[in-house]
Length: 418
Image 1 (cartoon, helix red, strand yellow):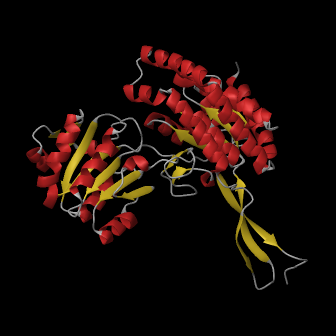
Image 2 (cartoon, helix red, strand yellow; image 1 turned 180 degrees about the vertical axis):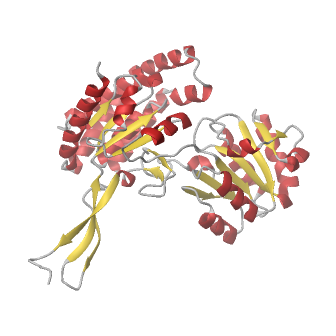
Image 3 (tube, rainbow, N blue to C red; image 1 turned 60 degrees about the horizontal axis):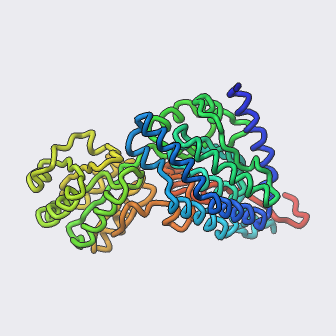
């Protein structure tokens, strides 16, 4: 296979499909989404079987446990995948909405219309549900998609791709609206991220190695985040029971996700009463604690934390812990070490909570809630294309609106400029 020629063909077909999709009605797009969801439910067993083949190959290849965890797809996961697509179908139509329409002194009306981006290239690792989520969001937002999943999920991704094509054709839309790259050759990524004539934006979902490569080589604009070093700060006015529950969930519900808490900060005045209980709970669940000197004094099992630990995204049962003077030091620490993904405060003090929301420079900031809520599904977006820690265009979980842009529109009645 000539990879360059293959990718160029995908690009041309995607560009043509994007023009058809841009004029598709809401009814057509929703019909396609519901048909895709129905096909996924129908072929649940086949998808799980394909995933089992991927898992066996991944384990044989010595893939890291965190990646194997992300790769796994159960029957419940297939149902959730279909439910996410159905939720996207039920969301309001974003395309064509005109906002901020107002008269100018000349008599013209000026406003903004929401429109698709065009063709979106999505590069991701491990999680096969991204194939369905990305297809649904791109379809509903009027964008054609070129999806390049990781080689470790090639069997399951190709199986999902066939069902997506089936649903599109059943609704009278081109199968080329969503194309899955069916080669595992890494050169395909290099072509995709430089095809400016066919691709309008790249959305990468993967580890630091993938993101670093794309940042160095991409010529197409990207919506991206590098990693997820998320914090929970337990304030000196925190409810101890809430703190215990939130830290437990944020750290231990799943270890291999980008919204898992990797760092815990505790106010000094309550550390002696709260930290030992939190540490006992985490240690009881097999979590290794790496802490500052004050943490080690309160938690004898804790290992000494290094500077690297405070920067780390472990994706494993390890957490860094630091005792801080109060909210000032907590905010400073987070803004220094955080990856600007998701950070949370536990406090009963409303002014402090509002200050934390204002001053922590992250894409999602939470009060008295687990960082695990930082997710398009949990935010009511139906599904997400990824998390953006950029500050231009889209930030946080990227749903339908993040896959569109606005253009200026002018309404007149024979008006001319004097």
